[in-house]
Length: 374
View 1 (cartoon, rainbow, N blue to C red):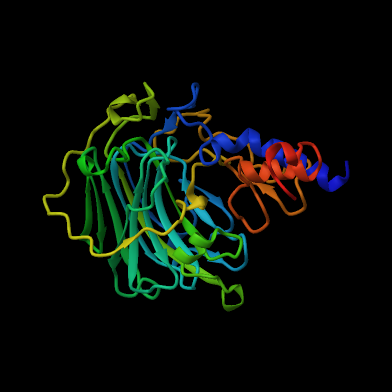
View 2: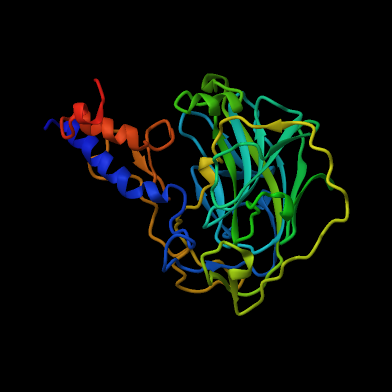
């Protein structure tokens, strides 16, 4: 077997071993023995114009100056982001930021849980006058009809405050203090986010030529890197955890918030935080786009922060350095921090049909038996 085929076979076998955990290191409703989530259990205000915060783990290369934290996409594969070292169990998240310009460029602010509940803000670099809100329950992406589009003046040139207020009964999205969307738990069709989440934000290229056509179209690409670089700037964040304690654990596999246990504290449902009627959603986005790949649950290099009730030795955070390679991968291919194999362009991981084609190409499986004509 030649070297290229050996690499393809190694890749195919490795992809088979990680495909069940594409986005989560350990999904508590599918796997046993998942480590607990370190709880914020309080409130925190972080001004990134003063520099980096030890509350977050960086991926890519965010930079800092008097404007705040900058997330720059300059070439294919760039996806800088920050991921919190703590989780919240219902809470409020405010981010003051400018979105990145550029056709195909996407800025994202995401809450996501280990079992893939998700609450999103996303900004398209081709649009300076809107922001999209979205949500997912347990990673279900069979339909893409949950996103809504909201008018905002000057998302690229001016700082705006974007807020998510999340309780057991509703999710409220606000722009500069004005409610633009309310999702009631009873209206979420069984996909209401309700498990401990950590906070991720950054920028990426949805318009990269390696992405599926639907993703490129949704991001209003393609991306022209020659016209860049493109930068998202986050000045500050404010986060309040409505629950208390040092860790959050799952007592069952229902994925319901009633199964979450707050170690040393209490899970607080947050009640109803707004009495305002849900604004009419006048524009929706239903393109064939996956949730932001760059924000999905991943391991991280951990250093003990000097604040908050961190639990020493928590394996959720105390992981080794992020793996970036794997023996036998083709040149330029890497393994990201969630164990997902990605090509140089950071395209989605290879699916089962492609793994089979790799093996057929190398003569290890009969194409005739599979009904494949090469």
